[in-house]
Length: 53
Image (cartoon, rainbow, N blue to C red):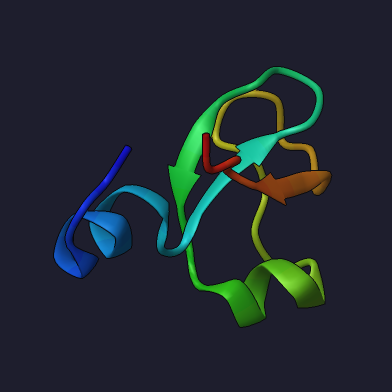
C-alpha cells in the first residue's frame, strides 16, 4: 500500500485504536504501554496499534 518510509511513519507511527469504540488517536508508544493514555471518546485504557493492510 505505502511505498515510501515517510508515508508509513505518518500513517502507522504512534497511531493507536481503542478496542471498545474504535477511535483512532496518536500517542507515544511508551505511554500507551504504561497505561497513561486514555481514549478521548470513552476513557478506556484498552488501546492497540493500528493495523497495516
